[in-house]
Amino acid sequence: MSDSFTFFKSQIGMPAIDALQLGSPFNYLEQVTFVMVRNAPSPDSREDVLRPYYLAAIRKYLAETDGGAFVLFTAYNLLKRTANDITTWLAENNMPLLTQGDGMPRTEMIKQFKKTNRAVLFGTDSFWQGVDVPGESLRNVIITRLPFLVPNQPVVEAKIESIKNKGGNPFNEFQLPNAILKFKQGFGRLIRTKSDKGLVVVLDPRIHSKYYGKNFINSLPKCKIRIDQL
Picture (tube, rainbow, N blue to C red):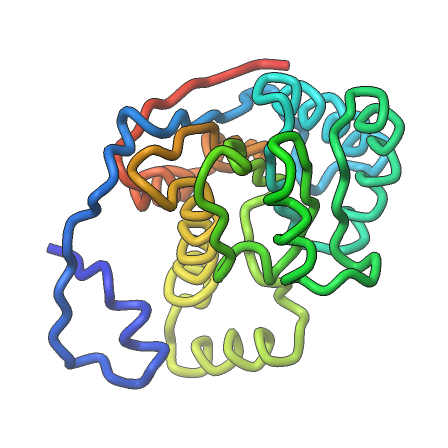
């Protein structure tokens, strides 16, 4: 039987410690609908293919929940371009837009987000974790891409090289479990109390088209699953 804490324990340098996993107080089957989009373009597609797709998909799911959403990105450049694409539509639909990188501190962005039930927040790394928005203000989390680390970042590159030198598999031992952990943290932004409800939408087709996609799905608590096509 696999130990779900194996990756975490290896990262903190304590692989032999005992771990205890406790159940959640939340009823995810009743509180969450997990949505995957089947006919999505690959994240490696050209920008002139990706940008219209993101615009159409994000508009669709924001309309479904009437705003109240975090849209999570893995790269700031894509966040900024998508925000520019959708600004007019959001204004026409009275959905205030908060964009990371516009100069507002994270704590102030969350404060402003909580003031309305229709706000939309575009965030990158720091909004995948450590952000708590209980209640009706947040009822939709849209994950644009599975959160794999960029392999050519110096620290990541060094870690990959170290695993290779030891005869290991960097993807299975480091890149995949790291992405799954962050994915779970992003998913966890939605349900913070027993009364919270909403959607978690994944726009990255790799979650159902790649062999490792089931690892992401299986890492989540049991919830309603919906498969859409745009």
